[in-house]
Length: 189
Image (tube, rainbow, N blue to C red; front, side, top):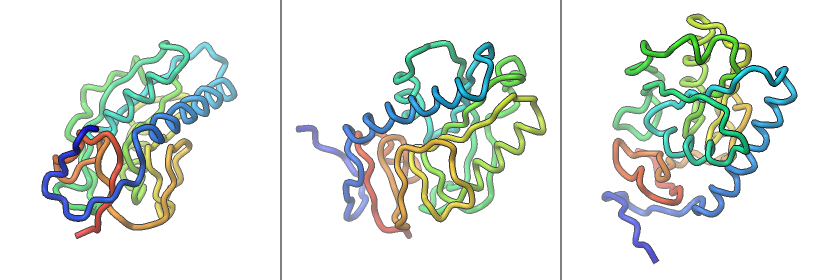
């Protein structure tokens, strides 16, 4: 059995196993494909915009669940946590200007991030994309959706009610613990 390294995190608790994550990503991919088929004429492409850094691992595993590989993907660097265990509410881009209209305009766009905690990041990025580009459809997909969030993602793998801090499987505490195969919780600062 693999021993996980928790980078000094006190009292980590396993919330979701690797097997639970993969099973829910398959279901989520199916829901996205169904929505795509229902709301498009099938002649437009899917573009996944992955919110870095937390959304990367989740996004690649999710995209591997798709039956078709007829999609584009790119990255948006965005930050709202910094080194804290809560969102500061101040969303900042650090990788955005290089996005190409070719993969967004007229496309079925899915924003992918690790957690929809307050909803601020998704709201900010979606509004900015609608201002700067002309996507046909924008959907929001999150690995974890915290029910108290101001927005509800169109797609999510896990819905949570409690206010614990999640880490592992791409979700970091600062830059630590993103490597973990499961998703864990700990108390917030």
